[in-house]
Amino acid sequence: MSGLFPLPRTSPAPGAVHVPGWLGEDRRRELVAACRDWARGPVPMRRTRLPGGGEMSARTVCLGWHWLPYRYARTAEDVNGARVAPFPEWLAELGREALCAAYEDPAAGDGYAPDTALINFYDADARMGMHQDKDERSGAPVVSLSIGDTCVFRFGNPEGRGRPWTDLELSSGDLFVFGGPSRYAYHGVLRVLPGTGDPAATGLPAGRLNLTLRMTGLDPGR
Image (cartoon, rainbow, N blue to C red; front, side):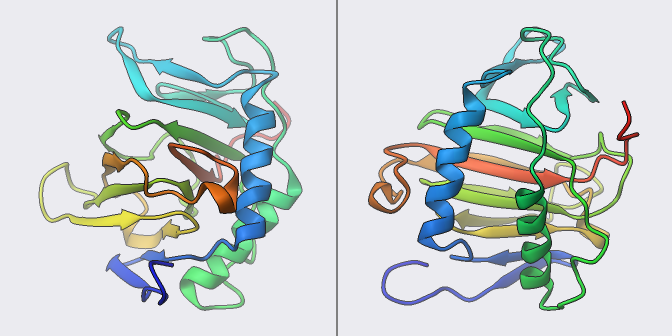
């Protein structure tokens, strides 16, 4: 929600839907509290080191599966070797609710069983370059939840990092889902807008939390 009036839902590309203000205050607070616990471990939140030696400016903690560029593992080989925290069923249920809300279809969540979450924390200087979420073996939609400071989010196309793209603001409580023809669209975070969050409603004093829920399609027995 922005100001006094809710913003309308939009669809920047086929299969991609932005639902402003979808997370209510109670859910935002619950998610912030859960993220604080997950950030402490068993694998602590960290800046992911890239193959070229650089580090991502956002800090990340994972659930269910640990993401390394560019694959998943059960243990955090690049941090402390510990097994990542399990992916909770209540978060999977939230993902199913999100799909139903985004696609305005009570059956949209049927069969959706996310088994990993990447939780990114952006401070005022953090960014995310244009990239595809393509390390999963499943083409199920990605569910993205934003809490805290607003960011400028660029959503592009599956063919490359260039145009066409749409720039939109993702604010605290916003839901963004991309699936179908847009599942492998390039996307990124251009900048964070400091001071635009809602600390009284979330307990997050500064910065932006982003949770992306995904189905890996990997063997759950691993």
